[in-house]
Image (cartoon, rainbow, N blue to C red):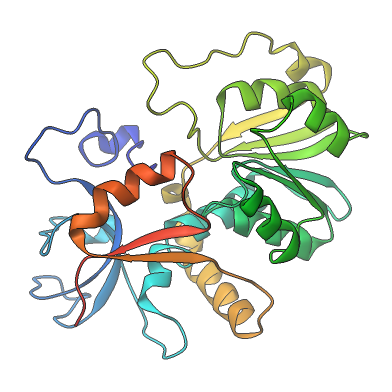
Length: 291
């Protein structure tokens, strides 16, 4: 639900605690049942911000919804993942924030998640050396054997500093951060000069009463680092180009997408909480209704 962050559209993109009885909102795929919008007709499919409910009313579809051009070889669920916000966000962060170059050393945290497992593959396509971290040995195995990462480690086993020293003896050029907190703080000390850090998410911090504060930022100066956060919604104009590129890579089997589909609106709460507990591999999708 990282879309709830946009300050100039406060009511749509920033949300505090959810009021009991109110609709939980997030990115999803929907079919248009009725429309007063000339660009979205009855029967069209869209992806964007919807509610965890059988029917949603959208008052500003231009900002919140994107029309899906149906093809037989792309499941609709992909528009909640690789062809939706997570996939486009991974692509934007990698290309627009990291400014990657062939041969660079890349570290991706939460690398087995919906964003991370794509970033690692984008980096490998460019010819980078890629290491990921994940919360279980099963995920580490998936990164190395299925997704093509050069190395990976379970951050819950052993000392984080020791793991980073082992995996990055010559330092890190690019860090794609999905975790924040202590992970980000430690990685700062392993970055090479002119390194780039793309802050995509901070899953370790979302539910803390007292978020972890980074105590030493001097390495930003010493190593001339670029530390930058971003939101996918700021780059919607580039989405058509991304979608065309991604569909082609999927058809050519040059890009692997991992998704876990869970059926039933009644499962949504436990499925969502399970992400914070590290239960998912790839993108977790809940099917609310089927035709």
